[in-house]
Image (cartoon, rainbow, N blue to C red; front, side, top):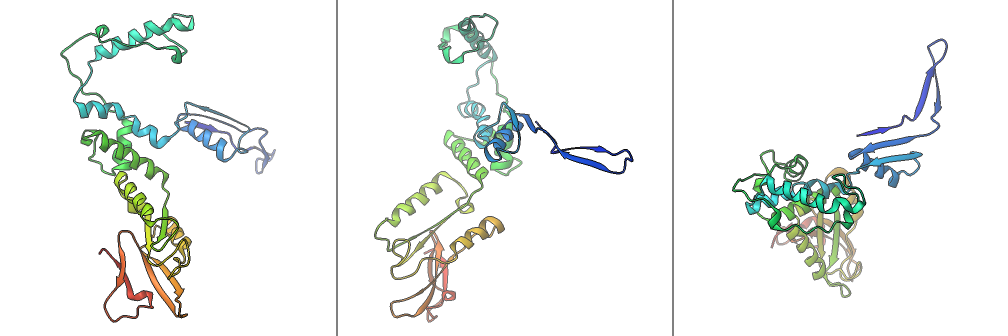
Length: 297
């Protein structure tokens, strides 16, 4: 919740038909949780927007914080081990008893958590044959279901392993960022190995699902380091990126226009990895880029 100050104050004239406007003397922001996070964003991005900001309990690192709320329940579900309530209660009581006096006042609270080095022993915990199922924290499960999985029927019990949870966690962080990355690398680059870029792309593909939604990599045959070689570098690359970000038109190919060693104007295409460029059919003019097509080989 947040309470931003109004930008202007107003009042009516004696006739009641006109308003007198003047800037406010001071502007303040007060918020907590989501409002606290917004306060920090304001302070970072718009430092002159408010004279003072009160930002309590800020929900920072949103994409990490929300799914992390489900971690404990996911672990219980994967392992099938649910601690009885009496164990949690006994652990809490023992921790408070050991650390409460450290701040000089015994009042069922302790103010310096860094000084609390209590190491619980199983002998202090009560034992029971009862079972629990653990209640999911709504924020975390809703984040996975609606934002990451986009599946109304999904629930936390469908996470079968820690690796699967970690992958979904990473997917959520990536999608929250919403950025795009487009790269190309010449296969005739004699300075920086093309296989390094290919390896990087493949490792991202292993750890992150839906890579084509945000990362496209193009290999350019004959291109030296950034430019030169037997062909030119892709043209209109920035425009392709703008179209992707602003119009949601993903680049299916990058165009290349260059003059060969004989001065002949040539057009080629570069294809998103792992696709390769090839002639649509034999006999076509190889100097025209419309003669080429991207396909998996």
